[in-house]
Structure formats: C-alpha cells, structure tokens
Image (cartoon, rainbow, N blue to C red; front, side, top):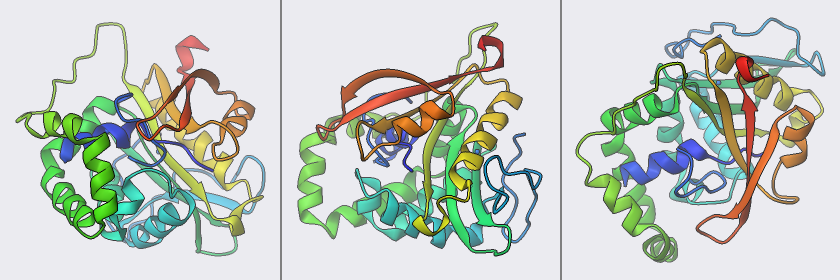
Length: 268
C-alpha cells in the first residue's frame, strides 16, 4: 500500500515537500513522542481491526534500516527512494525526533519481524518547522550525495525541482506555524507500506486506523494524503476505510495523483 507524501514533498523542498508543491509518491502515526531506541511503548491493544496477526507498535531507531528497505522496495516512485538508503533512513528518523510526528511499525503477533510501517504527523506545520530547524543540513548533505551518484537523477532534479527547492533553501527561518482561533492542526499521512508477506494480516488497515485515532486525539481538523491514481495507488483501500476522495491532478513528474481527506471528529 502506498500513501504519497504531502509532508515529504514539503520537507525535501525545504531542505535541498504541506500540501502541494511537489506532491509525489514517496518523493518526496493517542500521540506521544517516539520513544528512545530500544524502548517499546505499546500504542494499541492487541485488537487488530481485521486480523489478530497484526500488532502495531511505535517505530524505534533499531527499525530504521528495515523500514528504509521496505520504503525503497515497496514505494519506489518519486525522488526520495532514489537518493539511497542513508537518505531514506535519515528522513524516517525525522519522524522519531519530532513531537509533531507519528511513526509506527506492524509485526505479526507471533513474530517480531517488521512487516509494515507508517510515517505521518499530527501537526504538519510544526513537523516541517522541526525538520527545517533540526535536520535540514543532514538531509541536504545526503540528498546532494545521492544526486551526485546518479547523474541521470540529478538532471531530472534540475529540470523539475531546482527553483522551488532553492527558494526554500534560501529561507533562513521556517514559516511561522499560525493556527486561526477555533481551528486545529492538519495531520498528514506521509507513507505507509506493507510487505507482501504481511498482507492479509490487517497490518495496513491497523496502521492507518491507529494513525487516525492519534490525529483525532491531537485535535486535528483533518488528515490528508495523496496517492497515485490507478493500480499503482491505494485509492480503493482508503475509500474502504472511509476517506473522502478529493481532486485529481498531475505531480511534477507527470503522474496522476489524487488527494484523500479524513475529517476530524468535529466534522464527522
């Protein structure tokens, strides 16, 4: 399954992607800060929605090499996975280090093996601020290294993204995360993937629904994602989970993508 990244799109533009500018599959979660490496703090009871074999727990630093491989193998579209494992690991790590982010993995009940993951945030503007202030240099360094190793990718980057990325790079401070009175933050589901070996276990549904509960608990007015249109996307999956389909448009690489929205509790 594939949730294309609003957040990732805003974040990479800032460091070298909110909703918008470069929405691209992968190009480019109750809420607590992700625990330190080695500490496992359960965030769901053992009551997977569809199958008792799927158990969701918080992602930790020891999971990052595994989730990066799953990301590159199962979500190969867009820029981020093409920049290499080190970049993807570092990007995933930003979700562990922000109080505004939510990251979890799914395992089978009878095995500790990770079969899926989800990355998202429960306050998109605040998460982007955290990325800009704490991770921009590392992501820029690793991103440029990935481009240097792949001249063809570098050429594509120059043609499709240079100007927007340069504008955000030159911004010395992140934009102020202003929220109008009477409103709340927007959550963004950035990426979710389940290994073929784990499909049918309810892992994907459990991850997405648990993230939705986290967004509700955080007072989010809505949760957003984008996915590719057609067989490469996961639109039917999100419709079955009750997400509302939105507009269809093309990303910077020419692929058709569609926005999906899950309204917050007050709007339901």
